[in-house]
Length: 141
Image (cartoon, rainbow, N blue to C red):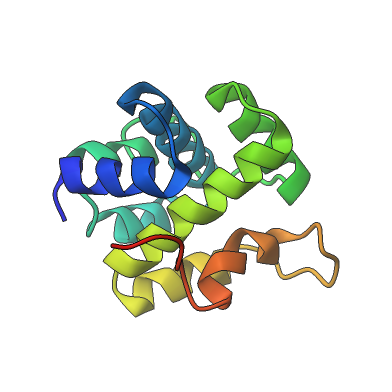
Protein backbone atom coordinates (compact mmCIF):
# COMPACT_ATOMS: atom_id res chain seq x y z
CA UNK A 1 0.00 0.00 0.00
CA UNK A 2 1.30 3.43 -0.95
CA UNK A 3 1.12 6.58 1.18
CA UNK A 4 -1.89 8.06 -0.64
CA UNK A 5 -3.83 4.82 -0.36
CA UNK A 6 -2.98 4.44 3.33
CA UNK A 7 -3.99 7.99 4.23
CA UNK A 8 -7.05 7.82 1.97
CA UNK A 9 -8.20 4.63 3.68
CA UNK A 10 -7.80 6.19 7.13
CA UNK A 11 -9.55 9.36 5.97
CA UNK A 12 -12.46 7.33 4.59
CA UNK A 13 -12.78 5.09 7.64
CA UNK A 14 -12.69 8.03 10.05
CA UNK A 15 -14.89 10.24 7.81
CA UNK A 16 -12.39 13.08 8.02
CA UNK A 17 -12.98 15.99 5.63
CA UNK A 18 -9.30 16.49 4.78
CA UNK A 19 -5.82 15.08 4.85
CA UNK A 20 -4.66 17.44 7.62
CA UNK A 21 -6.87 15.78 10.24
CA UNK A 22 -6.00 12.37 8.83
CA UNK A 23 -2.26 12.89 9.05
CA UNK A 24 -2.53 14.32 12.58
CA UNK A 25 -4.43 11.21 13.71
CA UNK A 26 -1.95 8.85 12.04
CA UNK A 27 1.05 10.76 13.42
CA UNK A 28 -0.40 10.98 16.92
CA UNK A 29 -1.18 7.27 17.09
CA UNK A 30 1.95 5.85 15.50
CA UNK A 31 4.42 8.27 17.07
CA UNK A 32 3.01 7.65 20.55
CA UNK A 33 2.98 3.92 19.94
CA UNK A 34 6.59 4.16 18.73
CA UNK A 35 7.48 5.89 22.00
CA UNK A 36 5.91 3.05 23.99
CA UNK A 37 7.37 -0.02 22.29
CA UNK A 38 11.04 -1.01 21.95
CA UNK A 39 12.90 0.48 18.99
CA UNK A 40 13.36 -2.89 17.25
CA UNK A 41 9.65 -3.67 17.50
CA UNK A 42 8.78 -0.24 16.11
CA UNK A 43 11.18 -0.73 13.19
CA UNK A 44 9.81 -4.21 12.44
CA UNK A 45 6.20 -3.04 12.58
CA UNK A 46 6.86 0.05 10.49
CA UNK A 47 8.92 -1.77 7.83
CA UNK A 48 5.81 -2.81 5.87
CA UNK A 49 4.19 0.62 5.99
CA UNK A 50 4.66 3.42 3.46
CA UNK A 51 7.94 5.27 4.02
CA UNK A 52 6.21 8.49 5.10
CA UNK A 53 4.06 6.58 7.62
CA UNK A 54 6.99 4.45 8.81
CA UNK A 55 8.80 7.65 9.81
CA UNK A 56 6.17 8.42 12.46
CA UNK A 57 7.09 5.25 14.38
CA UNK A 58 10.83 5.49 13.89
CA UNK A 59 12.34 8.81 12.81
CA UNK A 60 9.91 11.03 14.70
CA UNK A 61 10.53 9.20 17.99
CA UNK A 62 13.40 10.35 20.18
CA UNK A 63 12.96 7.74 22.94
CA UNK A 64 11.51 4.28 22.37
CA UNK A 65 10.47 1.88 25.12
CA UNK A 66 8.96 4.44 27.47
CA UNK A 67 6.81 2.96 30.23
CA UNK A 68 3.32 4.45 30.23
CA UNK A 69 -0.16 3.00 30.49
CA UNK A 70 -3.21 3.09 28.23
CA UNK A 71 -4.69 6.25 29.81
CA UNK A 72 -1.37 8.06 29.28
CA UNK A 73 -1.28 6.80 25.68
CA UNK A 74 -4.72 8.33 25.12
CA UNK A 75 -3.66 11.60 26.74
CA UNK A 76 -0.63 11.87 24.50
CA UNK A 77 -2.53 10.93 21.34
CA UNK A 78 -5.39 13.32 22.09
CA UNK A 79 -2.96 16.19 22.73
CA UNK A 80 -1.01 15.64 19.51
CA UNK A 81 -4.17 15.10 17.49
CA UNK A 82 -6.04 17.92 19.22
CA UNK A 83 -9.04 15.63 19.79
CA UNK A 84 -10.90 14.52 22.89
CA UNK A 85 -9.83 11.23 24.46
CA UNK A 86 -12.81 9.20 23.24
CA UNK A 87 -12.26 10.31 19.64
CA UNK A 88 -8.51 9.73 19.93
CA UNK A 89 -9.15 6.21 21.23
CA UNK A 90 -11.43 5.40 18.30
CA UNK A 91 -9.02 6.91 15.78
CA UNK A 92 -6.14 4.88 17.23
CA UNK A 93 -8.19 1.67 17.00
CA UNK A 94 -9.05 2.32 13.34
CA UNK A 95 -5.43 3.14 12.48
CA UNK A 96 -4.14 0.04 14.30
CA UNK A 97 -6.66 -2.07 12.41
CA UNK A 98 -5.28 -0.79 9.09
CA UNK A 99 -1.73 -1.41 10.30
CA UNK A 100 -2.84 -4.95 11.16
CA UNK A 101 -4.03 -5.40 7.56
CA UNK A 102 -0.69 -4.21 6.16
CA UNK A 103 2.01 -5.84 8.28
CA UNK A 104 3.07 -9.47 8.66
CA UNK A 105 1.28 -11.36 11.42
CA UNK A 106 4.57 -11.96 13.23
CA UNK A 107 5.30 -8.22 13.44
CA UNK A 108 1.78 -7.50 14.69
CA UNK A 109 2.17 -10.25 17.32
CA UNK A 110 5.40 -8.54 18.41
CA UNK A 111 3.41 -5.34 18.95
CA UNK A 112 0.86 -7.12 21.12
CA UNK A 113 3.61 -8.86 23.07
CA UNK A 114 5.38 -5.54 23.72
CA UNK A 115 2.32 -4.13 25.49
CA UNK A 116 1.18 -5.37 28.90
CA UNK A 117 -2.05 -7.30 29.06
CA UNK A 118 -4.74 -5.93 31.31
CA UNK A 119 -7.88 -7.44 32.74
CA UNK A 120 -9.69 -4.11 32.79
CA UNK A 121 -11.53 -2.41 29.95
CA UNK A 122 -9.07 0.46 30.25
CA UNK A 123 -6.03 -1.57 29.27
CA UNK A 124 -3.92 -1.94 26.16
CA UNK A 125 -6.26 -4.64 24.87
CA UNK A 126 -8.76 -1.93 23.98
CA UNK A 127 -6.31 -0.69 21.32
CA UNK A 128 -7.04 -3.91 19.43
CA UNK A 129 -10.86 -3.91 19.74
CA UNK A 130 -11.51 -3.47 16.01
CA UNK A 131 -8.84 -6.02 15.07
CA UNK A 132 -10.22 -8.52 17.59
CA UNK A 133 -13.79 -8.05 16.39
CA UNK A 134 -12.85 -9.09 12.87
CA UNK A 135 -11.60 -5.79 11.46
CA UNK A 136 -13.15 -2.71 9.97
CA UNK A 137 -16.43 -3.39 8.22
CA UNK A 138 -18.02 0.05 7.86
CA UNK A 139 -18.84 1.10 4.33
CA UNK A 140 -17.63 -0.31 1.09
CA UNK A 141 -13.94 -0.77 0.42
